Length: 300
Ligand code: NDP
Image (tube, protein in one colour):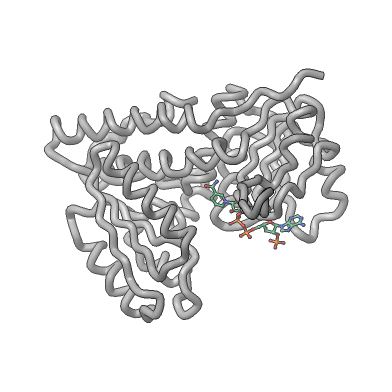
């Protein structure tokens, strides 16, 4: 059997960023608006610092304004809530993102609930989560949005596809399930208590892995010709004291069986920030009563 087609998230994300940049230019020239994204980072987690830097750089690259709020690791919850209250009132800020994970003394749900839902570009606020579940999506979570765009780009119409999603987190598994239900897929969500996981996975036309366990999903778990979306980002030891990134799927095995697969890195990862920028443009438009441009049509 021939090898799976690689789903090139880097290229799709670059295309989406160009569409976002065009929308930012349109907002500036036609409406004198510059979308502004505030990124709040509490503490000094090294991975979070890298993610935050990337977000800030890409925000600037598409012509949006970015505001970086760095708070020390020992910041108490009320200080974070106060900071968000200020950003909620700031008219130059259209999107607010709080980088997760937060230090132990700060409860992430309380912080997310403090963000004005109209500025919740991560799509994690209860109101936005509720809108997604009830079929009225507004600002939807970025990584799930990225998964959906890559699937549409690869397969076109998704109607009727059998999907298995491994992982049920609020930020990946559950919203991916909701988005794919809306595409009329038949969706099964698996988790750590699921029985016969390998057998379940083998029945799926589309397999989405969002587990956080390096290369857990083996080639033999995949239906021949299936489309595999690997959300996992795991750093493991490489040779000569180096480290390398792998997904939740054993790529070398899966590529021999699947019809199409996202690599790690270079698959879902780049789509996440591009979708964040797209959400910031959408949020800006909604806040000013403007129709949001169709940003996903350039990709899917
Ligand atoms: P969580 O740890 O929040 O959730 C993991 C899910 O996997 C849980 O639902 C858990 O089940 C399930 N799980 C764990 N072990 C097993 C197992 N042995 N069998 C079946 N299911 C299992 O992770 P996230 O959803 O936040 O992230 C998942 C992965 O995606 C991580 O690698 C993360 O780094 C990556 N990620 C990548 C992003 C990107 O931009 N590409 C963005 C966000 C995350 P249970 O609920 O029963 O505990």
